[in-house]
Image (cartoon, rainbow, N blue to C red; front, side):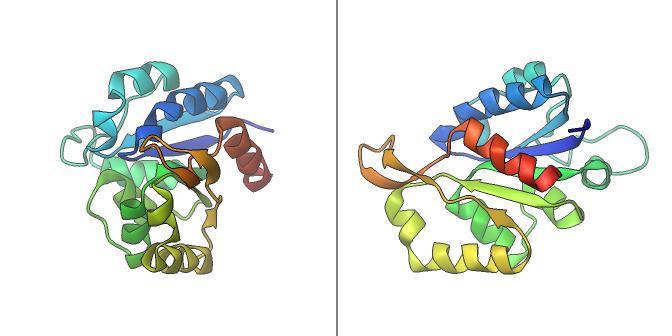
Length: 179
């Protein structure tokens, strides 16, 4: 597989720590990785960690962009070969399904024409809620690939669907989209 530019959106889920492993795996495969984080994600993992692993600046806000004339989120959107959001919270899924752009991830997502892969992570009751199911159906209808979450024990102590798939499972799905 040739070198690709992959945008990795990281949202505010306890599973955000897995973004470090995912970033590392992508870089080791020779891809150029640009991480985009919500404020919630930064409560679980630091931008510095993902910047170091990706070897690229991390986008934390579109308001701090000072480089050149082209807005950074548009530049990233145009350069992307693929956009991955992992973990994807119920909130980010709802925002994408409604076409909202209230954070750097959704702003880039609305501006890119690259294929997109979403890897949800949330409490099982949230995953099974009719609103979340409706939003996921909308994303799929919009051409976005959604990986079903894994089943198991979650950080809240409950057992069920909602765990972020393992980074290797996400990598396998990415490989299919990048071919």
